[in-house]
Image 1: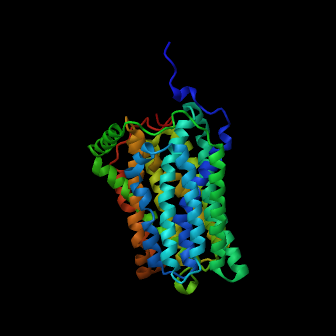
Image 2: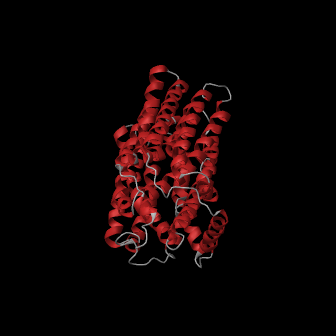
Image 3: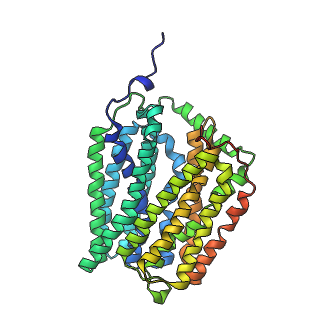
Length: 431
């Protein structure tokens, strides 16, 4: 009888509960810091909207191009070592970020630190997801996928809600937003240095987690994944949909926080940083999570084809909530939070269809690599429109800007009509 492969025999016997929650909480925090907290931070320190949108949108680039260096993670070292070492890099970068906040050239140096965090985080995503697949059997992967998703979402809420709320309260108490953000970034530095120490000790050591030995074969396979992805007959339609589905959101997400923070004289709602953390970062993220759970349930019951149109509209139509907020400019926090929750629930519900579409087009021999390529185009579709959003907003004003955001959703609605979806796909989950 042949010996069982090491992928089935050399598994760590400890509980995944000791490392999966901290691994995926640590995966989510750098992303939300770079994508969301950076916007609030620069707005608090008086950076113009045009500069905020342009430079923070560039920070998407590491997630756009991460498929290009993913083979390096396979060739050099183990996934385990990549995970905890990159967490140490992120922790050190957060410490440097905190130290650069008080300087007169803070914008230049803090932006450099955000770039370092972004590249380390994107590479950490590759290593962490790969380690998850190596350290668990297929059955346990399925059993713990909900847990990893829950803690990734918890990181979103902790960052976009809790940390923004903390920065706002500290700024109100000290009267100095720089000191407040130094404390936030210092806390993140301590957290990631703790994760470095924890995961260096607790992560399992699966026998299959080792460097790839055949570099030439890996390179050939790497090139083959790109060739097969771009050989699709429906390539133009697929890329068009991937790039335009979030065209409206890519612009809105950069300007929602400035809109909430700016005073009425500038067309904003005049909320404090702490109120933004509560309404947008906490209530909004909880609604987004609930929408995502509902969307996944509906697709599992009736398939992607049945829900594609309702979910596409669920993503785009609720953008009208920001148009109404810009028209009426309510002062009650409950009213504003309710409008944000409505928009975020719709987005979370509908975004599930987009994720399942990427899963569908990635199906095949190179599923993991094709999905990574699809997520790269998704990030590109967020980066490029976001770069111009501040310039557009400053010329149109908030009301006309959000009307423009609604118009920007039309291309993806049009392309949805041409997509071909297998009626059975997603009904019982992807294969």
